[in-house]
Length: 248
Image (tube, rainbow, N blue to C red; front, side, top):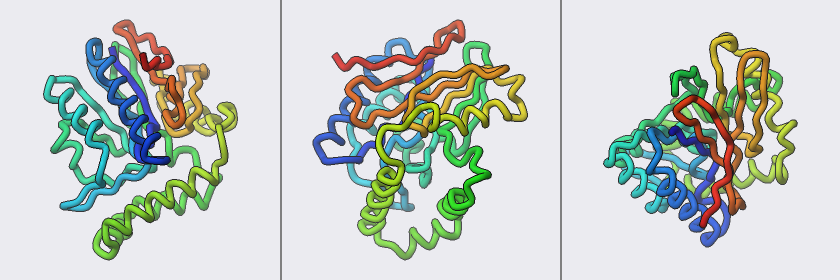
């Protein structure tokens, strides 16, 4: 079995809710471990994550310990970076044994060709400001200056402020038909759309499934404020299902 989840945004909110969300994720990992051939976490695991050469953000020790434990037991764990946690420098790979993917990838799972990615920075050609922001955040020059000139404590404060501002700008619970439209179009127009059987996205916080001319398209949803968060599972025959985790 292959398991998929995204958009936990660990660190968001007050300390109690953030801790509860982390414990919920750790419990989910414990529950799926018995059947998991591989686990895919599709970005925005952290509300803000930035690595320096010798410094990483404080906290999240329960999750990091669980990822290391599962990796040590031989379970494949794949992390795809999102727009809130793209600034990584190999810490999770070295210390937790996971594989980090910095861009979407295609792979074969259960005999099916699957496209996997967070979903940010795709089909944004009609959004010039978003294009500029993404280019700035991904710039090696900007990142080097930020790392050298800004003290980590100030950087983390800025990052948490930026993350909260971004969330407020997008308002409350998203309408799936609106939130997912651009990425469904991306799947329909992909140059290899006739070959890719499944697209799996995070990013939109709106769990849903769609059928295009050639492919199935799935959105994993979010974990913020969710006692029964949505996740995806693919069985040995290649059937993909969105499920809700009942934390019992």
